[in-house]
Image (cartoon, rainbow, N blue to C red; front, side):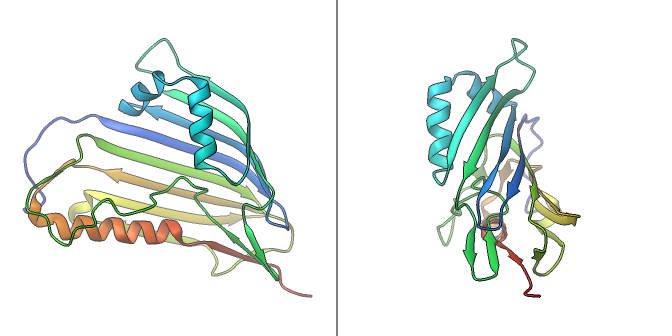
Length: 219
């Protein structure tokens, strides 16, 4: 446990919340509303961005579909979070193969690659600030489809829970409630903890890239 501790330094937390309310049709098309809420340093960064640049960035992140009705709310009170909302529609976001749909549960809002690729590291890891990244998607699915494997509850964490990633996927009627939280409680780690940090990100990315499989049993 002592290997993780370095020094007690008050650190601000960068907060980001994604909320999506979407509907998935039988062919793999998806449509709905997405809202991002940015607090802390995230909010400060988004206060500087213009709507045209923001739209371009979102379109690059979600190239599979169309973005419309983009709204950017930057309150005068700088202690309040910045909000971005828009409509997203894609005809083939999920892949349909025979009687199955393969769905990315986090849309495209996830880590693509592990930032810690080196086999070894000889100096500390300084994240700069703490992070908390919360994502929720309420996904309406068509009648008759079932989630292979049932509900999901999974946790990835380092020693002492200084980095955690939790996923919960629960079906309620025809709605899949897909939620995740990535949380960092310490932003500075000694070099000897590097293997644990790298392993944490490897496992988290594996979970994030795992697709949901929806099956429609043949009568």
